[in-house]
Length: 204
Image 1 (tube, one colour):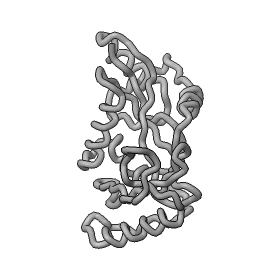
Image 2 (tube, helix red, strand yellow):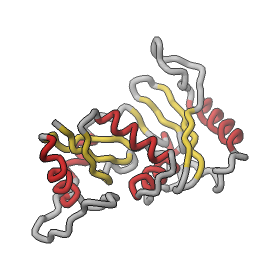
Image 3 (cartoon, rainbow, N blue to C red):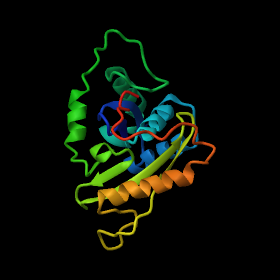
């Protein structure tokens, strides 16, 4: 069995890329992230980098499962049905196939009860985790052609054996972000000003 999936950004939850995998969704998402960080010029990876630079995450959702023999046909149908995708290939021009509204998929994504809020209270790169009541900080630098993401280390551990990137206080998280930005300011990939807080970067 294989899986047809969609990639979406946490700013609007709209599916923007459709793909297929015979592995796990987590593994496939990791592969996409590696390709995006390596500077691949495909449209999906330029879109991913643009969203990262805007402070949002890319996530993955299952659309349907099917036999391996039907994966290509099923993937092509979803690509044809859904509007606004960044897929470079396999898009068919078939006017007899009506596009499905993606509202039902967006609703499904939002029912997943995401555990975090990106750009919390308008602070770029600050993520608030609801179950931990704590924050993590990501610094993303570069451009839509090539960018890098770094998680800023914290000094709090809300759970036993959890990773050490947490900040219970929002002000401390913001201070840590500013220190990290200062550290990377001389990096050759930092070719633009850091995004300002509460800046509307969703129309990417």
